[in-house]
Image (cartoon, rainbow, N blue to C red; front, side, top):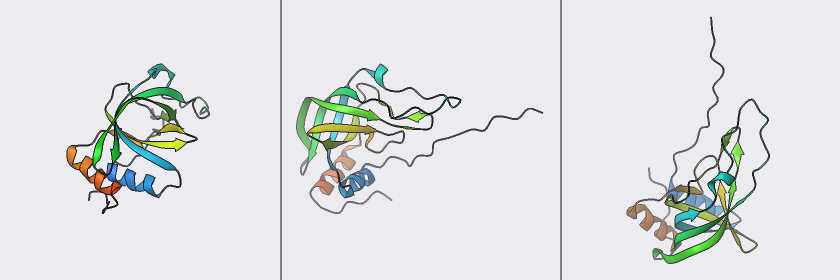
Length: 152
């Protein structure tokens, strides 16, 4: 009788922009929120890793240029053109954070020593699909200090 090898899976919460905002708002680091897209060399991001090989160390950061809009109290209405950011992928087992150039995304970029760092985790959180208009307005309300709770 043949047995299938064990299957490993990554279990992630469904991305929720409001929950992500609340998490980064509570973090000791400083963050900025953006909606837009990145231009970068996708070949520099780590591929899925082979489970039969040892897990590699944290991948190198990837320079990127971001174009879109920054979140402020009135919404995502501050234009950003070709802002330099660093994409910092991380891996959990064989799964590594990824992003495709030109994907329209919501990004929570960490400010560190004057540099904007985008943590590309294996599970979406700090980078996720751009939300709809209603969610963007809820994020603006969160930014104004109004009630900020994830959808139920």
